[in-house]
Length: 161
Length: 279
Image (cartoon, rainbow over all chains, first blue to last red; front, side, top):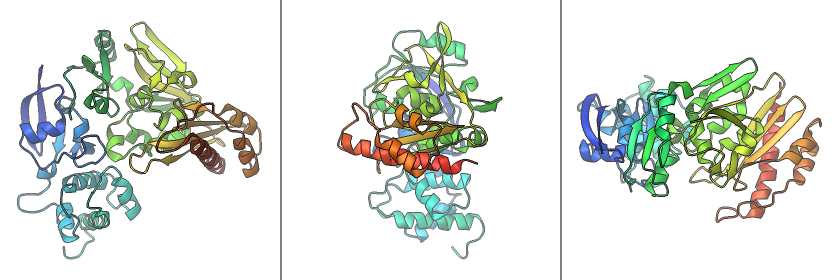
């Protein structure tokens, strides 16, 4: 049975009809064509599909699209301002925070949620905050560095980026 | 991997939720972090999901006149951040901060966690140690049951199909009381292989475990022998040396013997942490 839902994604309002069982990640990728959000493990463990729903990080493989009716969603596509990368994206580039890149959208989105809660996390807090995100290239060190760098830039303490 | 077909209805209030749940083969849906994984694996295939996540009457923490009341829809994130809980039951906040990962804590709820009753979940032992009451509403009105007794088997509880947990209630801790939760977790999943919740209330000591057995349990003999004691390291070690369980879990992560060993180590850590937190 179809459900008509309204969702704001990256500042744009969408109204679509979805099946109750449609997962939010499939809605974003297949119905809206926003394929920046990756599907990884599909079992709520890897975090590749992390997005922000009403400003909080969630795994979009573990939420139904109908549950997100009326919410405001941010995906990786909503991070850059035109050609200007978001400080997190710039920091991941500058610090070699990605290797194969598959986990990167989820890493950046969980980091966005983390920095919204805690703008100046310690290294330990960053590592704890990444507990639900897996990088199978095992490039965690530079991911942590990237997030710390982005936090500094966003707090206006950074030097040249 | 996606769920089979089901009908989905969003309840506007508790009364409507109960009416909707009175049909055949219905399940209440809140944060979905226990239920959606089961739906995807087709381990649960309900005909209808009743989304209760919008019911404000089931949300939030209030501490008043020595009683703490925690709504079933309160998320782990909210429990972990609750200032009211820091004094009333630090153990609940502490355990919630150790559930899963940030994304899971943003969505998962207290009610969903205890209704699902995964043996490796973190909150059940906390409720046993706090001597909490679980309040339940159903087609025949409301009732409450002690947490010790609510958990009846492996992923099984006293909750009937058409009922909903509304909130959890317990006497808040006072000055001079203290509590702590210590956990040995699986390094990948974060689930508790052994989780110990300790509550010291006046001279009464309560210690409970999850992860160790199919059903979370209160270590009554340990608590009784420590109640009224000086809670010295020697008294704690001696009380824990007698800790036993008829049927500890045994799986590829930890044998029964190892789990009992962990229970003694983490039970000791939780008790010492609570003792040292007393004002």
